[in-house]
Amino acid sequence: MGGEADTSSLFSGVIAVFLDKGIHHRRLQIWKDKLQQKGGVIRQHINRTITHIFAVDVKHLAERVGPDRLKKFRFVAFRYEWIEDCLKAGSRVLPENYLLLSPRKEEPALSDESTPSSIISEDDIHYVLPPGVKSKRKSAGGKGEDDFESDEDSHKRRKAEDWMDIIQRGGKLGIVGPKGITSDVNERKELGSQSQVVLGENADEGAPSSPGGNLIELSPNQSSHPYTPPNLNKNITAIFDELKNIYGDALGDDRRSFSYYKANSVVEKLPFKITSVDQVKGLPAIGKSMQDQIAEIIKTGKSSRLEHFRQDEKVKAISQFGSVWGIGPSTAQKLYDKGHRTLEDLENEESLTSAQRFGLKFHEDINKRIPRPEVAEMERLVQKYAESITSGISVLCGGSYRRGKETVGDMDFVVTHPDGKSHAGFLRQLVHKLKEIDFLTEDLTVGMDHKLEERGVDTYFGLCKYPGREQRHRIDFKVYPIEKYPFGLIAWTGNDVLNRRLRLLAEAKGYKLDDHGLFPVMHDASGEKVMDRSSGVPCKTEKEVFDKLGFPWLEPNERNL
Ligand SMILES: Nc1ccn([C@H]2C[C@H](O)[C@@H](COP(=O)(O)OP(=O)(O)OP(=O)(O)O)O2)c(=O)n1
Ligand SMILES: [Mn+2]
Image (cartoon, rainbow, N blue to C red; front, top):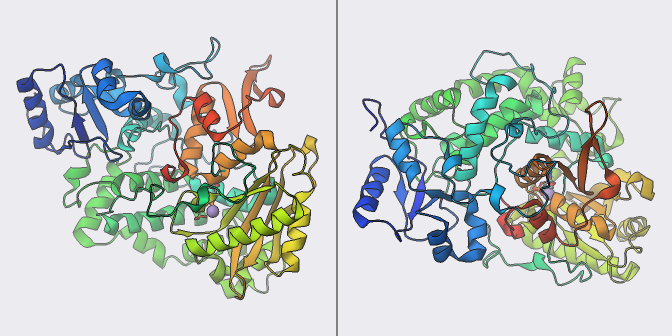
């Protein structure tokens, strides 16, 4: 067994169900005891909190969970030998060899001879990063001041982390690239309507023609209620969250920002309050630096790193600037270099675009979250006017609203028309109408009348107000031709973590996924990757996109990863 090494937290974070068929009960009992002694938790029933299902083989697993759920739990089901080998090694061994079902054998979908059919065993996993990530900011931020590794150094470790991530997150395919979420957001803000961001969905199964009665109305008390584990470690996650924002918004350091994001996604799900750093050793996304920081927070209640930033005038100013809609890290830095220190200073800055000016003027309003019932009302209002302009038009509020959140940051409307034609030119009329009734108040970015060769998606980003009030909210419209709609809906429903996973999964299979479709990627004569936009994989519903990718289907309210 583990020798002298302290393995008391070997299985901490593991929440397991043991399927006892086909195994001698005494042997089973030994494994159960060991798992519990070393920090694991055993449950009787399979639910979303489970990180590991152990079984003897696929047959027994299938008998117990049934074929539908089997698909869902594919990535958390392991042979018992994993426990045994971890005990032998005295540390957690990589789980990939113990998976009861691997996507390689199972996956119908996209794979073909020329592309890797497995997303797990190929080395390419490390190289399949989101577009634009490769060289970006590789050396940004002082190297060596802590344990954030270089891209190369982290490859090996990341593979292990990715695996742990899959398991930890309850079995969704979790290949996590280093692209900072916050930077995506900023890019989107700065790019405005040319957004290349992946976006999201709504009701389903492809009833885009029913603008009224859709999935959106799911009451939060029903099955649509998102899974929100009680966060027992808010003392830690609140600090990490602030650091994530500082690194992302102010310093443009995606790598560090993402490290905190990942650490938080693990810490917030732990079923216990961390009282000793030993409890988090070996957990995914919690490397040496995170452990040190957690130890400090447990001991002092504070993070010296955060305290340092809080006192740093430059970080303070740049973070504030970066929180204004339309201002990203590079603009924030420029504004600081010009001598600005507070938001008030920016009021007289002439270089601001009109969108940034509105962002500044309504900064406080925009940063207030909107209660779900108010969004429901505004959605109905928009749907009513939309229908009066073009009958049969489908207008759904995606984003966090569609994912069932109680409050939302903004409204992300996704629009299409089932006839494949009537969406064209619709947005201009809708915006006109909604301005007439004083619902839409300020334009941020407008990208209308897109021709097909411009990829055919009209967009509008602006501000609106709830009838009878002055407070502004952020509102977006994206209009997709029907054949792109499932992709647009997935992308704009999110969440961002799911989008990243879907994109990486597509890439691992030799495709590129974005809000316009799923396209094969070829290599030209010089080996450069080229995407074939003309031969997208046709999908009529969100479900078909998930199926084609071989990703277990998730209802919108299950997409809060
Ligand atoms: N970096 C980003 C930003 C956004 N999105 C996608 C997923 C999001 O769900 C959707 C909408 O973006 P929002 O920033 O509006 O995020 P949410 O709607 O999820 O949350 P909220 O608006 O409540 O803050 O766009 C993404 O994939 N990557
Ligand atoms: Mn949103």
